[in-house]
Length: 288
Image (cartoon, rainbow, N blue to C red; front, top):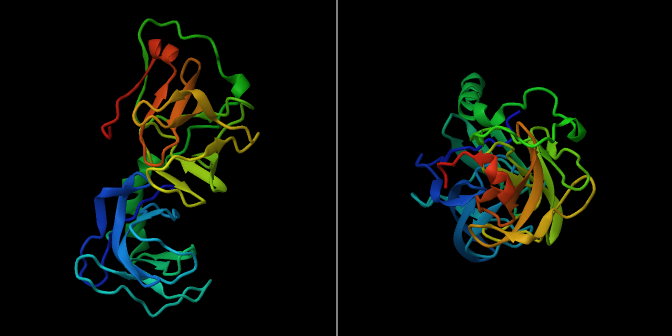
């Protein structure tokens, strides 16, 4: 239900917050740690989005190497007496601000992690209060593309799509829905091929991916998961950073409209076709 939960973590030794608002990953505050791997030392910023494995690091992180993490505040090494059940590397513990513990594998490339709540009832209550907005379901069965009224909006006043509105999204080629389990699902190519999951709520920029995506780098291609056709268009670029953009269709109250998303990881720009601005306006985001 809550596909984009973010966890606020603290050092298990000094209990200081490890969250870094300045260096964001997946458009959320990151988890800042000191890192030692393959005889190199540096700083790593991990994604705070649960089940996302993206990060930013100032040293190269080789695959399958075991890393040593330490707190950037007290310099204590973060260690536990548990080993990974998948690769047997040491697990790294963190305290949850809401109570409990998160552990991740210290081996680069291993995706094993688990969460332990000290009080499950309180934790679920906190999650509901914090993420009920993001985790809410689309009201009712998503409409099929051919059931949507495509007539042009005739009212004189502009239709405003408010922040938090669920954007029912479709492929502009095959017209199939891009929503899966309340997430906007796209196939992404960036050296490897995987899937990118975006929040379908307007001006909520949380995302996660099944492959590693470098922050501030442009994805090579974004593809419809149904028809395998590219969604990148050649005659438009991001108004904020100039990167290529992906076009999908979204259903407004009155018609289908073109909706553009920047292909640069971390860029929060999105927009409409110039013609649609005559009838429809996106409510401004406080994050811009």
